[in-house]
Amino acid sequence: MEYKKRTRLSMFLALSILLSIIESFFPIFGGIIPGMKLGIANIIIVIVLFLYGRKDAFLVAILRVFLMGMLRTGIFSITFFFSLTGSLFSVGIMALLCKTKLSIIGISIMGSIFHSIGQMITAILILKIPNLIFYLPFMILFSLITGMFTGYLAKQSIQHIQKRL
Amino acid sequence: MQEKINKIIWILVPLLIVGLLICHIIFKNEGKEYTRNFFYMDTYIYVKLYETDSKKVEQAFQGIETIYQEYHKLADRYQSYDDIVNLYTIHNNTLEVDTITLDQRLYDMISYGKEWYDKSNGKLDISMGNVLDVWKQYRDNQNGIPTIEELKQNDRSNIEDIILLENNQIKNNHVNIDLGAIAKGYATEMVGEYLESIGIFNYLINAGGNVKVGIPQNKNKFSIGIEDPNSKQGEICKIVYGKNISVVTSGGYERYYEYNGQKYHHIIDPDTLMPANHMKSVTVITDDSRLGDILSTILFLMPIEEGQMFIENENAEAIWYNNENQIITSSGMNQYEQK
Amino acid sequence: MNKSDLKLIVSILGITILFLIIFSMIQKQEAKTALIYYQNEVVQIIDLTQNEQRDYIVEGENGPVVIEVNKGKIRVKQEESPLHICSKQGYISKNTEMIVCLPNKIVIQIEAKNIIDTVAR
Image 1 (cartoon, helix red, strand yellow):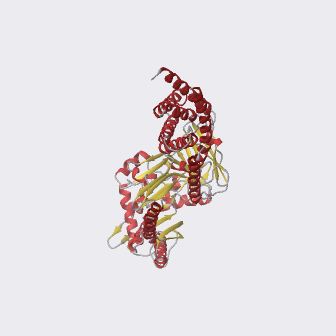
Image 2 (cartoon, chains in turn yellow, purple, brown):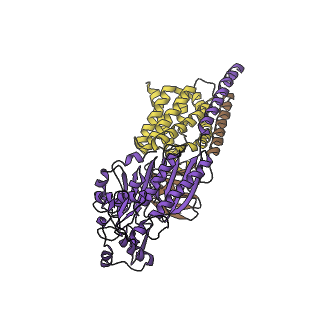
Image 3 (cartoon, chains in turn brown, orange, red):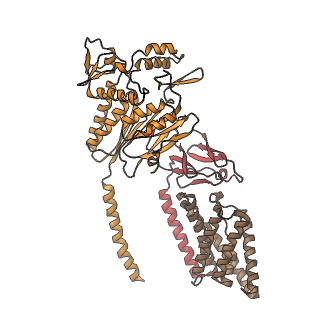
């Protein structure tokens, strides 16, 4: 990987970890599903997706989960698996939707929603509590809103960065 | 676009109709739920049936009541009834005969009791009526406990005095026979057989805690809770799942009295003549209610380790709730733990 | 924000509303029994139709967990855990609600029907 790109991606990775740490101070849903987060770290993933492409977005996303694991949640703990599946679902759907007519905001919304869906599926499978599914509609609405918010921030950042490149 | 929508409608609507038809066929034959209560054998009996034919239901309840009524009379130790020979008659009759003829059912129960005396090494002793009466007196007055001498004095007859002969005859030895560990199980098992003989297989019977179930409707097995012996409000300590099974619990926590800070319950050990204290309760699961009733009493009267070995030879499983509030299950309990 | 985005948002809202409608059909107000799970096994079954206020103590992973039942509602009153997440979740009373207590491995769920057919005593 080219030197400049590597440095920049590392900085984005560091930023995403910083955002993750910040959002870990705000447990949502009264802590019912531990590991459920606001998803602001998603801003970085969206930015990387649009500036560098799918492979790099996946890379940053996975690395973020593992590094957060080492720093905070513990590798292979329950929260780690929530994060992992959430991120994979999220990057996955965003990568697929790249080529469609959706704008950055639309893609970010889907990323947020699928992050939550991924976490919920893992929670249901690992904890074996099928009733968690009742919380899905609320989570989707919440992710919709956070997705719009992060999408907007990502879009502004991307435009700003592209001017400089 | 329009064609796509048309295609979808052509597929979905017939599917929907087929689906509805299937549902109708599956649920059409569902029976309604009927329940009734009876009070016999000093017990509140609850019966639930699922049946489509309401006339059959009425017939069934009559049949059930008759069975409980008759076993109640046969096993009654305190009262005689004009038309039948029962335990009271066997004990108190002044007939000058050598032998008495018994109703087949009474004969069978006494025979069962004798059989299990041998099998349980004397733990199941139906000849203890007098001892039980002494305890009952103290329990009613709540004013003390009997002395060992008093109990021994009343323990005059033993199992050998109960002599059964051919043609449903019993030697007139005036033994005070007690069928407390047998009658309810017998009656309940007979009720189950009766229901199945008239074609009712979806039923649930709870005779004062002695449970017998057939096949449930709309699910695979019945859920039967086992009461926590420490509970004051009927809480459950375990659930077992099954169909065509009987669940019977023996425990000291329902019928007892307190004296000088100690509890004295109604299940008396034939060897010590005192209430048994090896555990708080034991529950037996079998397919035959007679076995369940008698086994639960036997297991309650022996230490848990002994009971664990004893039950390995029987076609039954058990759940012990020991004095340290732990639950111990027998080796084959697994089959009753899945829904 | 473009047309596709708006279509997306509308369909998401539509699906969510559909879910909520289905859930409201499933959700029943008269909660009958609460099931308390420890490590995914039922350890206590509580009848919520009794109106008395009562506390139950269940052994959790980190120590005893005090559960309070009051007028058809149930909640975790006290627990040993760093963040006290369980007690913060408050009361639940409907069969679509639940309390999940990961540190103590306790889950409380509500059934709208009687899950026990009868009790052997």
